[in-house]
Length: 462
Ligand SMILES: [Zn+2]
Image (tube, rainbow, N blue to C red; front, side, top):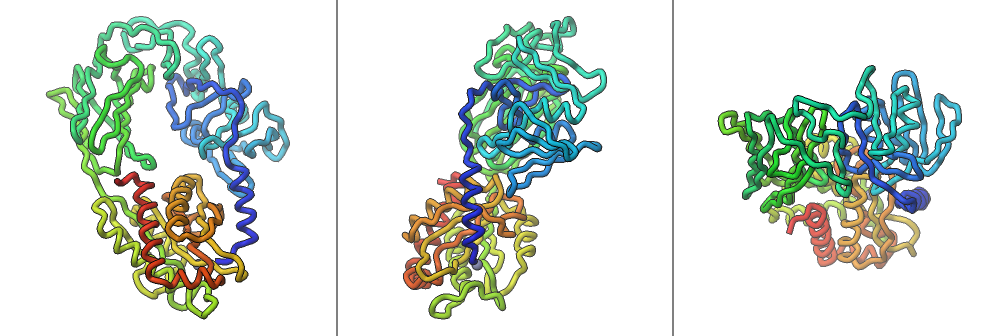
């Protein structure tokens, strides 16, 4: 692929989006209609403005959010209101009119954080700041819950009486005496987690990837005295890294248990109503890894200095990677093509998305002027940055060609696939040194091993 001009642009973008936040930051609790939200990236104060992950706006405020990577722009739509925000720009556009904000959206660890008060109030949603508790309360429902200024009394359903839920590092209020169903213990033994209640438990659950974890919600429950009253964790072994629990919501009281995993698992959740237990059983399962040999058949890809085809290099590499991955018990390798056939880019994408692929690696050889030599790794989506960095480290080391860096570009196979995805440009077929190596079996074996090592490192497989 020949993408020097757009690569330069991509490189510039890449430099821009490296998060550089130097403001003093205070992480703060965020309540939505009285319920504490626990997003992956904690809301925080930047210059006295509460910044929240953009996912809060879409998942909790019911707005439609679109991200434009080229312009670093967030567009938010709800009812008839349209807001455009740009990373590091304090001017927003509301319905096409420029409005100045107190704080500009920022990127932190690949997450876009936006000023909640500005966005919510523009969408007609009420936002309150409680300076004593250093907490933000967002109210979407008419007559919804505003800051609990007086502790709820009676019923014993609110363990955080007067204090709300504290994040780690905050001051703790003493727990009240439990007087209803409580979670008495959470135990992780081998690949099994047992949550013990004082009465029959009901659980809902879902699975999240990158990193792998299982979330189990136990509505209408509180944490018993044997556990920390607000949040805590239990060590695990095997597939379980640790089990975290927290009083996820205090109105109504609700407990969330998050099982952090060392590897991908399949799992079952059983409610044992007589023993008052919820039992989560895990089974390690294989990661689906797609290796995509670029081009094929009538699409030769780049033609090398001596007239060799890029498609043949790509396929040879893909087959070698597949052979190595076949020996990995925790990886199920899938090839987009295993012979000299042609697939449209969208067919490759569909194949990966439909197969529930966990990691997508596309293999290519590059072409430009004869003096250009080296290895490049491309990503497009935020969820692929870590994979790109790891793959690039292993592949450049194995190839031993000049390091032409990790770059961002919107190649279709890494834009439209819905898992971490990278495109490797192993070397330049237009450079005599690179070309000679790229068609040598020893070089291909070494790079194939580098690709496998990179994939295993990303998936944390020993
Ligand atoms: Zn190519």
